[in-house]
Length: 468
Image 1 (cartoon, rainbow, N blue to C red):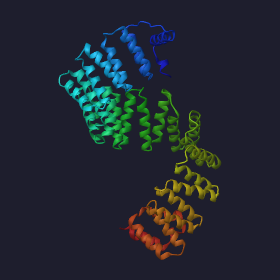
Image 2 (cartoon, rainbow, N blue to C red):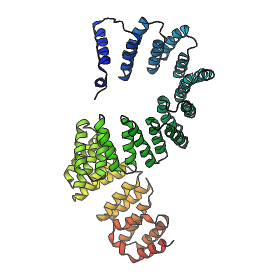
Image 3 (cartoon, rainbow, N blue to C red):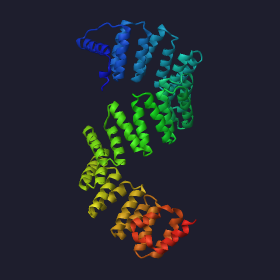
Image 4 (cartoon, rainbow, N blue to C red):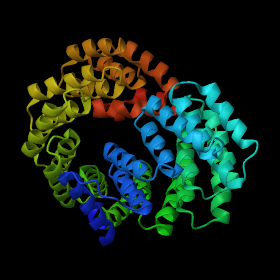
């Protein structure tokens, strides 16, 4: 459902008549409320230029109405036309020199012009004498100025003060998530602030939402999910809460829970290929491969050039043993994005499955060099070489990998290579060193050569260090 279809019939008629008057070149006179409604509509549609035209008409018709001057200045600030906003405010200040809103708009203009000290001076002056309602505006302006000056500590403190005065202030809550994220040091305090708010105002969905993100900042995803579930239970129209909650569920591998939340969201809101991708990923992880494929097909109709969709479809085909389908999807993913090592790696795996070792070798090697700082791809390539008996080539890449990354697992593969090449003494010496450094990674030995699981000397060393 589009924004336009959600408009009330009276507002829709008002907008339609106004746009027709523009087309006809007629300067239709409206009342103040109608002008305000039309401006609000164009702002919601992100049509700032048209909103500015409407405000200009309103000012021409109602030159003494300060609200329209404030509205024009605000629009100009949003469009970063600070010099024009300065002129608008100067004209309005002649009429009302001590108007708090005009002063705070002036502070925002100065901040936009990088005159931060002057902007803060105005805010501090306003805070010294205003009442509670205007104090909230002053704190919010201080936060916006601090944001522009990248002083996220002051931004956080200003918003904290705003929420002390008005705990449910939507503007303050909207900005607080950003302030917490960018300050990088108030995660626990943010949890406390928002916990207090929801205890006293349990139906404040935005506070629950911020609480969820505060928990996520410190990787407490279970608590984050619970808070975000409260957010969309309190406000069933809170689309971001649904989507973020699903993502946090996925973060802790709660894919079935995420699937349910995504289905609920998609029944209520318009969705895009990102939402479908997340849904397909959940379905893949809980074993609903055919459903995942259907979801991915729908997503591809919306966005045929997203390589991640093709890669996930390839993984579904791999699960089904549809090797040719997987190859086709992986090749398409690489055509769209040729810098992702995982795509080459999976292509190598598929070619190995169908016994096309030459092609598998090409793509395993490509994955290793593409992700050269990640030991995993080197490990898997060297494992492949050892499995097919190319010990000389395996030794070569063991040395090359050491120039790019360090991994005890590659060290263990070097042990296997030495043992298979007949250099048992060096192999056992290296194994003894490695098992003291990384006991758990020894399992890769058996992946490379199953006969080692019954090697008495290897088992004796493992038993000795297992006791330590």
